[in-house]
Length: 371
Image (cartoon, rainbow, N blue to C red; front, side, top):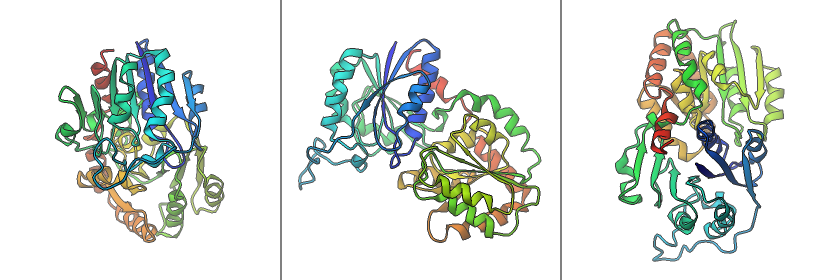
């Protein structure tokens, strides 16, 4: 089986879309599929990283839009501007034209697209060059011309998409379909067992692969000025190699009152999460990884498209939500104070988180792809 992925990473987009596509690609490749990627060479892309994992990547050059989609009064679905169209650095027509040359030669059985800036117009243009199409989405804000759609958002319902997809499209909605690497499911029993007697010794800070707003720096500042963490506490910060604030954070870590290490481009995130007692993290794709391992979380919303995820997890009792603002350090300090002396609350958050994701999402999706 041949599978083509169309997804991008950049300093603006982040890395989550590509990383979850890679998780699915790894599972497909292990079953014998030939997987290739199509990615635009934005600043902060993951093209070399994907190639380092053994996949062919067709790199699309950065281009200037020939013209913007119409925003004139009376525009219909064929000309509507998408909220994230600026993420593409091209028009949908330009992107489709570039992809046609690649897909016409490959003729994939499945084209899998994970991109907020692409919709049914792009998908229909490429329809002669693939057998079936799977869309991965989180927003339910635009139409798709797809055979299969995945939205792994907690609380997402199929009815949110029914008017946006063809009648025959099969919908996979909800966090039970979260695309997690196999090591998360493997470490789930260990991680849940060690939380039976909650303590606060290991704090993990992870704000995604880019962290363009320096949320990591704000968290470290909050920790350094908040009431003291336990004396035996250790802080681990995980950052992406393309993050613009990496050097600043590394310097900041050296001045922390507790041992603080900064890890870059880690390959053992599941183990780091399983060994942590509390995470302070962004409400992105790693939310589902933390849930699978039952990690209590203080969660920051770094982009508006993360808000639904964050609110759902807070309502479920799995996380404490903090909005990124000038008051964020104070809110983080207050949340820490509340949790430090409340083992019962840490255990409750862990149990709530673990009930949301069990790590079997990839297997469920693979069944739908008939692999």
